[in-house]
Length: 161
Image (cartoon, rainbow, N blue to C red; front, side):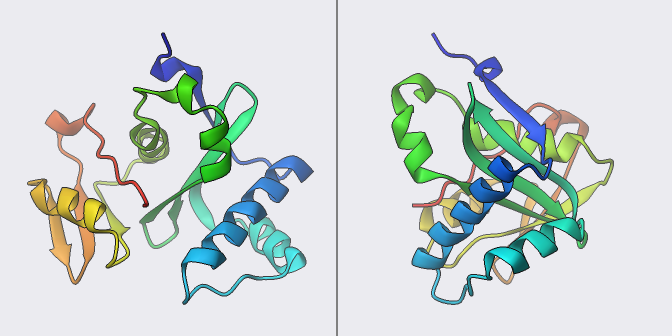
């Protein structure tokens, strides 16, 4: 039976493998987000070299990268999952809370009391989930979450669909 321990969340190190994986995530995003402009590979690499995030991690199942999570310097949280890689090991991941595991690792790597979470307006599932959570406050479809002591082990999951 798989456990959360099967998921390893590591700091992003700029190896060729990681940079290519992150660029593939951008390519996937450019197919589904009309407002997103896909940078060139060189622009992408230069951006990563600029160290643009307070915390930046990749989640792996065995050696398969599943997605990335980051906290930007303006304290926004972002998470992107690789649909193809997740599909390739979906049976092994069944029942695991991948997004929460990733977000938890990123949040706990920093010591800030609150963060912003931006959810696309068409992502009804995530918007509904955020609206139901008492410590998420809607700020024009951006959600501010304040970490409370009782939330120490409850990280909320937002899935793209």
